[in-house]
Length: 110
Image (cartoon, rainbow, N blue to C red; front, side, top):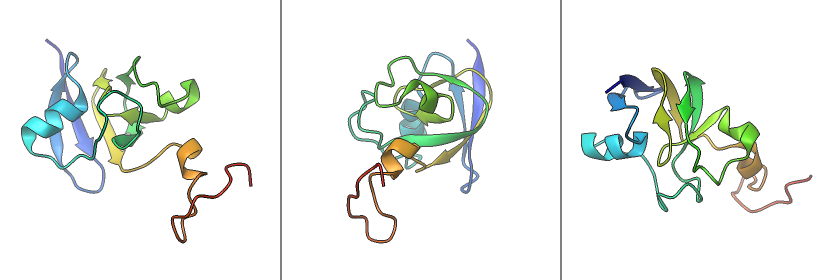
């Protein structure tokens, strides 16, 4: 079974994850505080920006094909190489819906 190192940018936390398990499941086992909610690839609560490396996440329905290249839903993502992830980073399609100043919804096409 192939295993890869997943490092979280900013915290320095590091875990070893096999290609057959999700990053979120390993975080939970290791006691790492990774946000999540639905665990089925839809809510984006567990989103992380892929800084380095690659994942497979065919069931990450909450992401567009383009977003899957740069973001991982840790509840669905399985590492294909060593990874560096920046947790709490959301795809542009989500960021466009929230104003950074006050958190109020704003039209995505402004």
